[in-house]
Length: 164
Length: 106
Image (tube, rainbow over all chains, first blue to last red; front, top):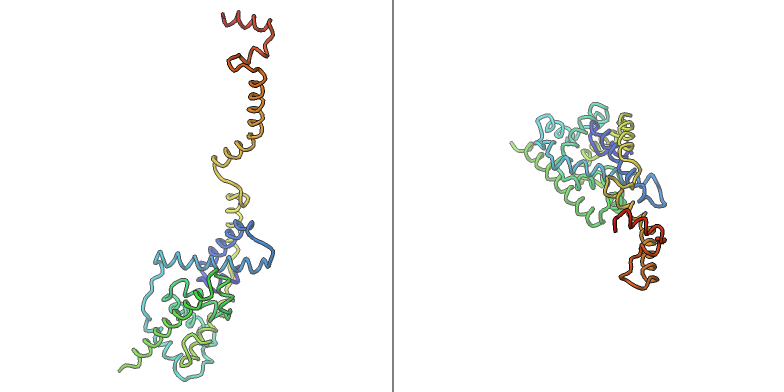
């Protein structure tokens, strides 16, 4: 459960999210039917992560700001033609994660979960729909919307930096 | 599949790699203690909480006895035949009746 949650929520909220997911699973034990316990627990954990972002979005505890100069410099460098070997270092990965989190914060909780599952984790659309309890068209719409938003963000960034 | 499209393949790969690197993060063990505390507070899953569900359970447990008693009383009324007759008369012997009459002053 922690393995699933740690990919979707910030590290400082991991303990609380795993705790909530475990309690939810305990309360729903009667609804568990024959099948894989691991899949059932993954589904509950993912939905708890989704609720975490919904709650956070509602409370607006997480200020969504524009890219800082540091972020912009990083993006410029990453988008340039240099080798990406330097980005494999741990320190650079932390920077990359910061940028990614910043981008994901621009998305709605649902769009974020769909994008993370399909594009970043490599799940199929059908699998993501099953895990999140949504229909396949719903996941597809969310994926389309989130990708468009991120492309706009990057395009805007590139345009701003490219402008004299 | 790329998130940002074919123009940003490199950026896509870097961010994807950064996302996967997060798997190294580990949850602490504090949540386990807190979960156990919450489970102990919550009781067994599916068990009712509060006074009202407990009262409901008691009513249903006593329902067969109550129904049986009601049927017995109804049968008694029917065997007596006369609705105006006092059912107590049926149980009391003459001695008991006179004693009661003395006590109650009837």
